[in-house]
Length: 456
Image 1 (tube, helix red, strand yellow):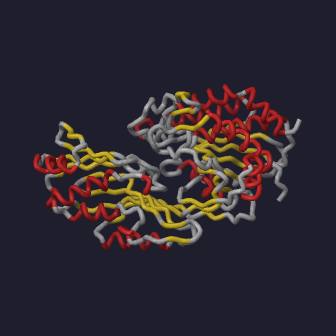
Image 2 (image 1 turned 60 degrees about the vertical axis):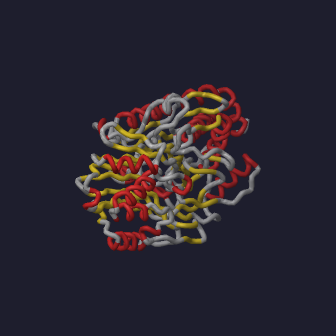
């Protein structure tokens, strides 16, 4: 029996198990939670629970599983004398669910041939497809040239301390070849560079009656809610006139609603912070709100860094979190810049923001990714995809940031979304079709098999 034949028999025999195991992980609300940080749980209890759940499952299947202090873990199998390994890198943390769900975001309901839950697309569903593909490979007894390692991070949606720990304090080796199932097919061989920065500026005296402003949950999410707090009833009345669908809060606040979207594609959302800031600028005459509206420009014009390249397209900027802190308007931005640019864009951003009255408080930066299409693992993974789908589409590029940047230049983003799949990552009613989930088990199982036997 060939490996593909074994893989197909595994999927047929274990369909219900594959669905139930994913549901079990989806029901763990693994949002980063500073309130439950503890030894072995650096990102909170739920993230640690999701990691333990996944590693225990891999151990039960016969893999060697290792938990690296709760930051990240891995499960491995293959020839013990192999000097190198190939890897799948997935993440078990998820963004907060937000509002607007038909079912509970942690219920993992199966309905209409789909599983509905936060994390189904990003990234528990694709990761568990990879896990089951790996289990099938292990059970098949197929001959492998390299070891296979599944790496499970727990801080991808925030600050990536998981990967810093894995390759830093934990001293883990780079894989020979790798992929992350955290984007789309056929594959993404180039990713924009990215940086997240916290900037602030003082509120003007004209905003003296405003005591609070809150919007956003994560830098890489377009805020769908924004709330202002004020003792000035006339100000609240003006806001009600502008936003008749807004919500008055009994404590002297007013909330407006936008549309959430992934921070890597902010044009697909409606930034609630920008909506409210625009109204406050007109109501108060405080130029601080005008500069916030300008900063919310998705092309980066408000930071003076707009531009594009032929490989990955235009720069994007997302204002993801806004708060008033000690009389300062504090804003967290997430920028994705073209892959062919160098990091001088950072200094240009800082200089332009300073000219506009903003002070830089903190930033994190990730360099761009570009793996040529005639190199591995692009060649093998593209072949796998085409063999399984018959689709001859060319590799793609994107503005999103994935674990592939942690293992460049030997890793790319490979699946799991197909053309035509609904784009619901980071949105209410996130879901994955069971058909796509099972298809990905087949694709990822074959991908790990082929990469583990690459000669060069």
